[in-house]
Image 1 (spheres, rainbow, N blue to C red):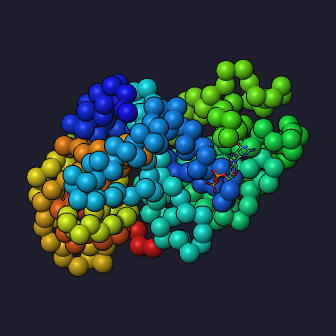
Image 2: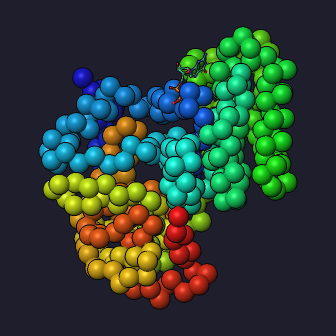
Length: 331
Ligand code: GDP
């Protein structure tokens, strides 16, 4: 049974458009496998009113109606107060080099989650290097602080390991001046200072959500510019054709708008017409009428768009003059 408030919430959201860029935070989550990424994401979603059981149910209902469309589970979106937080999962493996770069290209910040007992490991290092190169200032979260080994002393050691790692990788002064939070994803809390007396009274994950809002810069896109979306992922749907997902780099797109695909190879792209726009909402998805700069969305109707292509308004080529919109980088 879906609570009434939840239905209202979804109903209002479904006629929605993207929020203004200053109310959006796009960030990646970086962690070595087993350091607690899934557990933490679940806690953040739950805090923002998204419960997995309900939303999977909602989505499977909608899915039936719309013939089995699934949009990427590699990112999620949730409302925290007036802010829309778009969280993108980052693969930790070197085989996904190109994908990591594309993901880091559509975010302005990162949460670096490190098991306080184990410290930074191989997969963390690989992605951290790319994040630092992309100019991102990671927010560091030491997880599993509930465990006995994660003493204040140990956390201090791990923090200096992370500092050294950043320094070796050529981090700037600003990147070296990272904020640290202490968390137990399992128990569902995060704090900005080491919890010397164990689990803090009434603790929640709100301090981490607040830190994300404060620390991750809002996206820079101009909503009045011609529409351009850099395609980071493509899925195929038997009924609707390719579903392209990425961040709107600039402008605003409406369902029904004519678009053109600019292939990253330079090959001339076809024109299309946007048939649907969605974004994630918790573990489900929501249809949008318009998508604006800074938001991470999925679209259909841009026929031949492939990974690293740009989907944009037909007059985009002019706007692609150097310095106006960054051309997509090849992996
Ligand atoms: P992922 O691979 O990074 O997504 O990690 P998971 O979220 O699946 O967590 C890996 C394991 O660590 C699971 O058994 C979790 O229950 C456990 N775990 C995650 N967070 C914590 C934590 O804060 N404290 C403790 N003690 N265990 C945790």
